[in-house]
Length: 305
Length: 263
Image (cartoon, rainbow over all chains, first blue to last red; front, side, top):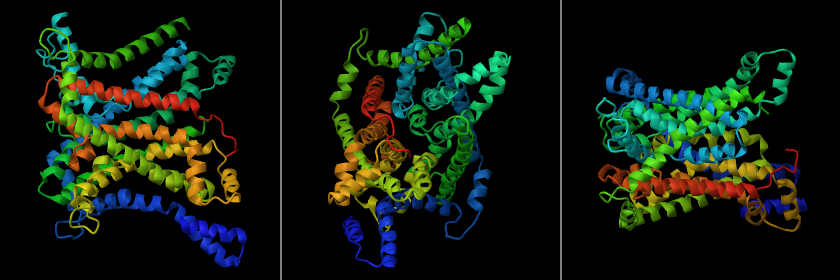
């Protein structure tokens, strides 16, 4: 920092020749952002690159595609990716549709104002209420002694566990994930629905459009890029999550993050480089998801200003 | 419009049920510890547990250091980008979004491999070093939220004029950032800080894999071994998240609304 202020003083007094001044100025400009870039490089980019490089090497350090090949060959790894993608996909899609419906209801449904403000506040809380406690909440609700299970059994005579219901499955986990996916959708999509201008509806009505035509030709084309973009964000959000699933089912549910967790804890794959490939596969999937997200985001910004 | 409103109420009430029933059920479950009657026994057991107090205060301290580190990295960078290097903004924004793309478990995997005891920078060789790495990891996870909050705050003040005025009065860079810029974006920084706090306090993945005695792994351990205490912990965690979000909302009322410069 002292270095920067020294240059700033010499600039104002103007004692340096112009050429040297500008190159020095260039250097000091970079000093201002250097801590950030060094931090990002050391603790974000290099650790990730280290794993990516490791994914393409064998135990002897030679470059190979064998680990990537093994990701597709090993049935248990293939299954874990499949389960992970399934859980992320369904929790994102269902969460997005329910979130969209709720968002339309609170913005366009003619509900009192407090409904909207309460929903938005609660969504802010619930979208951050993930991890270990969320799993506890659902176990206390739908577990064998949970309130809902007990009420269904004692009041309605429905023994859901006797009927083969089991919370600790991938569909159970999807139901849990919806608890933060729906609010996240509401938080992100509500501004987009606010962006639908009243004038468009009036213009459509003036031109003789029915409600259905207005939705099909105006609302859906304007909303779909933000909608799809958010679905992808929700997908990536669910794909990387581990704490909820781990507290929920222990390591019995084989999703990729739990498999990676077990690998980091005790090299269960007996091949460190295969572990790197597992992590690389996760980055590829969330990375592709985010490329699409950015693409949709750019498209949606054209209309929603 | 009548039917529209009806369906809006139906949607809202169904949604509200999905969100409130687990909270009510968890609360009810947490009161069931004493056989045959409701009591707060589970809470007194949890709050009286020495391990709860240790792990919780550990996580609070880690969260505070995470916030300090985050502010130290983000505020000068966001300020400098606005003032002098706007052309770097897309790159910086992209980097701050990376923690949302790269899952936390992958980031910590990289740390464990890169900063082990045999590496040039052996963070993991000592407990203190691992604490530092944990704080760094949390600051990385909080980067997207912190940067966005601070950048939004900077947008509402006239960075250039304030800087020039301060320079004319003879202020150095640390004075400008510490005594001019930071107080002006304080509300934005505090919003980012409370969000960071909410994320860090119960975080499980990093703390567990770095083997630190934090609140997240403690909750997981209780969940694996106890019946009623986890429900009490879930209610406590929900209350903390709720508290942080309420503070952010109250703060946002004090934040300046409009930008007084075109950019």
